[in-house]
Length: 271
Image (cartoon, rainbow, N blue to C red; front, top):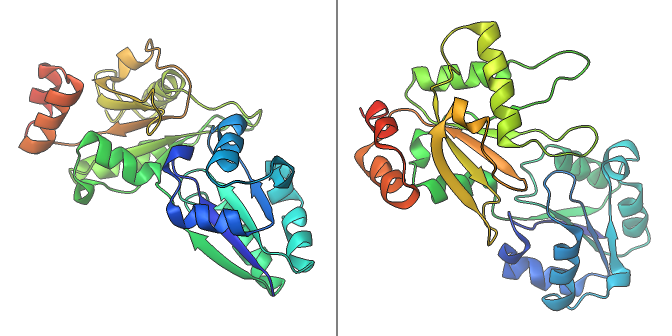
């Protein structure tokens, strides 16, 4: 029985844990994927070489097809031969549901699976913005239209969260072509949902918190309104949006002092 270690890289390769480094140094085969978040191949390979002392010949990139359509065939072949392996994924490994499917496939083959946790955008965005983790409702994803259908799920989740005075974290979709959604694209979709639903959830003046490349040296956080996000240039993805509910005094002060949140927005979000 071999072991597959599903390892979270964190939201940037520099945030990999000591436990993960120890495992990667020990196993013979190292796989990684970047289709669930745009961490560059170069940064992952450089980290594996310098920090984990891994020979580049042992590093294999997996595509969405490798994992989802071919049922992890490459990983299973390594495990079936009696070798342990590591699968490195962005963020925390079990946030993307596709990796739970990996657990099931490998487990049914009689192999062990060990999860090595990593820093997720779900916790990092909350920590970085200073908003209280106790005041977040369910998470949703702003998705591209598929087969002519635009999901209204982010509208409904945000509406329900705001009705309970809870903040909402909105993840942004990955296009079928592999392109990652940006905040201006997401803002356009949210305004389109408002045009359809007309319940005031995503009116053009809705305050939002824009987050780009969190955890990297070029990370950026700004507080603005939905209409202004249409014209923002936040650079490369990954991007994330928080829709804040009413702010506590300490939440408001952090947004004011650290991110220069406009006073009119802070007054609007005051209890």
